[in-house]
Image 1 (cartoon, rainbow, N blue to C red):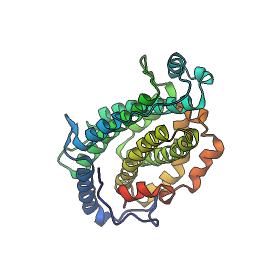
Image 2: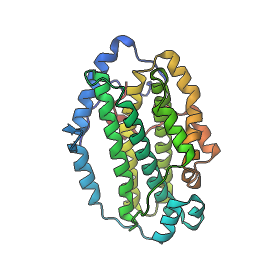
Image 3: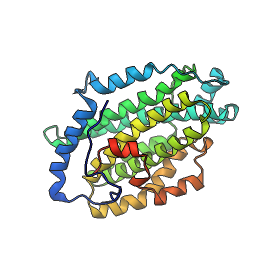
Image 4: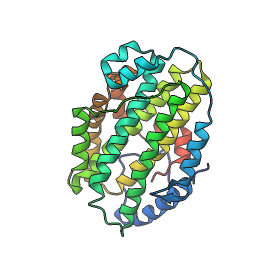
Length: 295
């Protein structure tokens, strides 16, 4: 599936650079066209046609992880983090995918339920916002799909911890003036985490190229989306808001990692998180920069 190229993407662009107010409507229209090219038919009931095609293709990636996989231990760790000590590092990496999937699904559900009451469906901005929310549902399916290589079936209902409920609640119920700065900081934090996971997966599965490629392709697909989501939320945040976002993002990152301690178990420690301070668009893989929408 080929994505549209966006000529304004460049190494000089930054997550924190402001967008001129006069250009926003044109950029929104350009982003809408990009989403049509990337997603195909975007029906909020039936789904996005090209995303469904991608998932069907991914379901055919039959590479099998060669190593110990204890399904019972995995599901105990899924239910209780203190059981993670019984897993191998590849199993912890998979668990991180699964828990990130569960957390994202919960966040999308809560935020959508609250935001839809505030949206004006006649406005282009809110129309695009709804499409991006639906894109997020594909991220959960992309991540959970990695279990097919390990022969693991995730069992039991997942319950968000109090920290995650508070973090998502603060976003969902934030007044309009604060919503997009908080969301933008969250999106930048997410880009950092998925970029870090991309590198870490390459290390953990370096001796199993087929499994590694599947997990990397899943993360790249999500990164392409998330870069566009960052661009979109920058359209709603002025220069003052962007300076707040820059200061807010490290705290958001800390909050995300604390609500999903599997990230630390797989190696995202304080030293690694400190790299967020210098992290920006140009650190992303060339494929992501080539395929993503960013202005």
